[in-house]
Length: 199
Image (tube, rainbow, N blue to C red; front, side, top):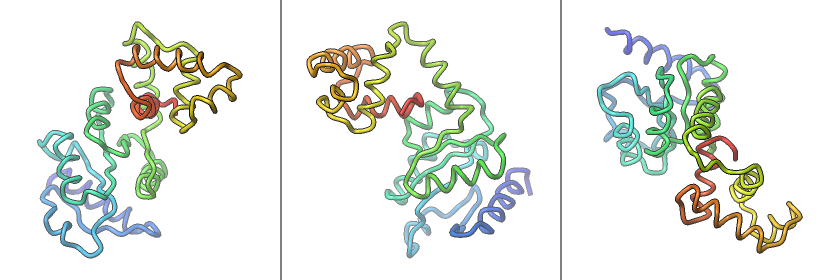
């Protein structure tokens, strides 16, 4: 029995003991096809990306292909931004560090299982700092305000009223945001806000 097997068994025990959580299976050789046929199917995968040689993005993809409606939360011992970026790009709903406490782990699991998202606060702060340093065309304070409001689902008119600016000014700001972030839609603004932790 290797160290990852022990960790997997211990984690399954902790999760199974939690009210409202039920473990349907665990292990590096987990039968994904069997989970697809389960009734009801799992509503979340907790993926240890250190427990396999398979790239994290592929693991996340396999989970999504097995049960498309299931949520995915990544557990990782990797304290680096590229790991977090690749998991977010692959579509994970949560990312929690193995350096976290048990309470933090369950906060992440429950947030993701209930349809939300979770990024380890330490990793989120590192990502936000890295994004700020990486882009020479940093968003202005006003543009950050607008990104946050777009992510909240407000229309240009509502943003205009909230910031006491004309709709034309808001449209100009959003055009500059599109240009700086190299994106073309409001949904991508919201995704950016979530990715860098300002939503």
